[in-house]
Length: 284
Image (cartoon, rainbow, N blue to C red; front, side):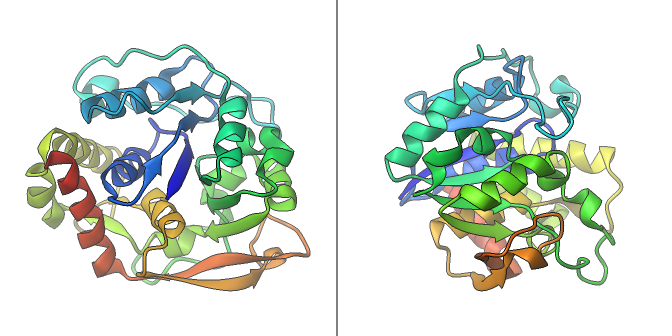
């Protein structure tokens, strides 16, 4: 299956987890990676670094330089590079992310938006015949025991709602992985031994998860939510995800009169083993 992630890697740690998942998935062909809100190419540098770690420099990477269509600003911040990556990572020159997205869509790839929708909105008509999976949308509060996050925490939509509206209007086959349901997929301290045993990528992801937990107050032994990996597994057709037809207007902050597909359930235990197995394939 041909897949193209559009990512804001370098902010939260789950983007790197999702990219590693795609690289370790046996039936996935990664045809390109684009980064969003990346005028300096720093996010593209992180994606390139991860690809280099597994010998996949054949995968093209392009940085998207456009600011939020809604605010005209570049949202987001980066955590300390030495703590999270263990070394300085060289930024990549800005490329034409919109052109690369269009080429991937024309090749039949599924576009997985695991960052704000700015690049996808600019690609416009190129996505009309392409499956698009968007990590975003808010239709209810998370489960009991999890943070009571409202729609303002739906970062991928909230920081550029104008772009999200554009994608909702133009994408041909649209599937949403809403915030609350993706929070059921989690990386916890008890998963670290297996992750650290999964080669250099596993150790890097474990390092980032620990640092993320230090920087963000999390309940219990939670290290990070795996929002973006759920979106990727949705694109890959993993059997542990339930998808239902949903009125688009029921997903807050994205208006529309069409029906789309929406993730409504995730097999949390199955997710953990599936994700870790993909990382282990990289070390093998």
